[in-house]
Image 1 (cartoon, rainbow, N blue to C red):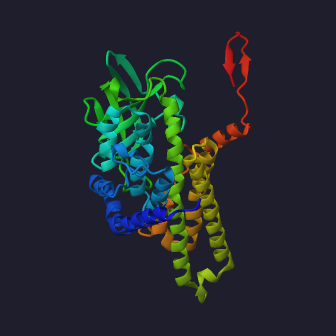
Image 2: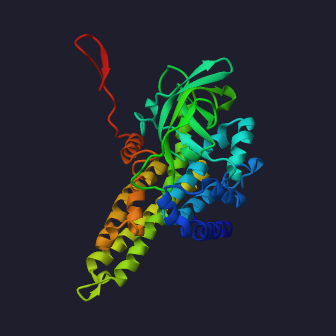
Length: 396
């Protein structure tokens, strides 16, 4: 996809913001295990960066998703993964369904302040027993007149400790798991909403993550996004944008791993010469950069198709899969070339190694992406029904 002058101008704006407002503070925020979310989001909101592809009628810029991808790719150049992750949750994970399918009343109450940076959004889908298996969630919403009574528990929820509202997937019926779910906006200050203790994670330390419990939370039905029972479909559509965002977000971070490693091995001398002179090392770095460029091309091909209104389930899943694969291999290879220094927490490569490990897990594990791709290729084995000796039908 060829970027326009408008894309390049946005690119420069985001790059300057990352260099001036994020990177100088990253070490402090990583030690604290948090960053000033509301303050930073207000600054992003003033620049229009929290609503790039959101409707102008609600304060967004009304641009297509290619501009969002430019924003996310440049955001990924931050010297940590946690801050970009928290921002991407706001722009590409918790608000797309709200922008595309919610009533005007809901958009005015929740989307508009999120675009301005005055409200922090969080996506509450995963549960202790249902991570990538979204159909298996147990949180339920019982109908009671004009309200739902919501009970259940969500786990690993990014932005939870600072969120003003949750875009929450719940069961609103007892039917088939793909047809009994609804998306609800649940304000964090509603009676019965409890955010648990902040989780201590291997990486992404500057983003705050916690479990969220809902105990008989009375939620007005007008807070539902779309039709009752359409939640699974809407969440799957939202996942497409989330997975494209996740892929775009990793590109510059992987490049950072490579460029910082090049600087290190060029200066570090072993046996009387720079490490970079070793063919095993400079060949490996060239291979890694080639992989990143292939990954960038795949991601932007998917973005272009998404902007054109095509079904990008396959391409988005492939991009997310490739992101996960490279986030495991490139930081690991680079860290090896740093030797003992790579094992020290204060190095950027060490932080990247820890932060990047979430990519093949979050937003749909690599194995789930492979399952989706296989299904769309027509090579996923079909489930076969058998009859037990007791004449009970079971599924393999």
